[in-house]
Image 1 (tube, rainbow, N blue to C red):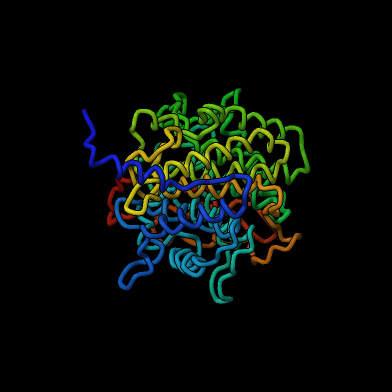
Image 2: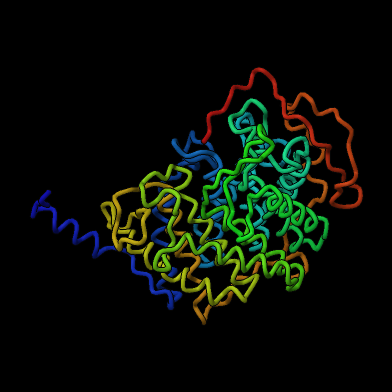
Length: 454
């Protein structure tokens, strides 16, 4: 097919207007990130009159909004641009829910463990970066992360597959029988980060327990590949071997936190190094690709955002486990440059596409594409020599967020669980005076309809 001569000026203009990222220049990275962040937030209307703070419009699921605000906190921490901070804080707090655990009434009936986990990780990042604290009468970032962790601990299910979290929280939801790496990865990642932030070793013990379970089931293999999940209908004997960037990233970042928390334990060093090596499959010419779907054009709305989180977690890994820096830095640099070149669409020539290996805009647009590009450009900041490295704080190195070890453990799951009368056990306590609930069956009232979330 011949291209009309009238279209050439438009195509050339888009290429000319692509976002240039000089990964040796903080000013260049900040300028590029600012442009992409503005484009990302143009999709959000939750602060408009009559809209719900924290929600993205259709077709974006609730969890992806949590991922977006996590990405925006990362943007602020790396660039110093606080333009969106009040909006971010409003969104996070509005989606907390009545039990202060990121189970808002408008989402609870079809909420999965991974959905809740992404909002909790946004709160955890807020604590680690000393993001502006909520008013004193509102739940605090660290306590929110602890509440979600505690509720996940209460859902650890040994009735099948020897343990693990289910993908879905409630029995009538599609995916309840699936035990997957992202749900357990959120739990693992929170445990590792809470151990480092608070110094409480019980969080670290949970992280070890989750890792051991993933390996025993085969969701982490001997080469440190992370596979998608397994059904408990056959007791997790068959593995779905799809591999996603966000699964690799969430375990890599968690392992790096454990390496840092244990002050360089060789086991966690080996695991961190192994996960990083296994992540080679996600790069072509050092540029990041969602290898399971990108080359064949089948990435869905969720999957288009995965590279955002992977980029951020790679960058944070270089700080927590500095031995990884020489391997990760070239990947972050090439990916940021490629992402910038892919941001040449739209009327302004700065709308971001999804494929970074082609050197141009791929014709797609959306929250996932824009967020992934922002994640990659944010992450490039770690290799600018003159910039101060953003080291996640802890409660002993300047962290100001207020925690609550017992957050979430007394909530009756908003009244939706019917069978939650089992005995409370003490073997998995996280702190003195705090008890986790026994694992309960996740049966909910008949008024809650089956969720069709992907």
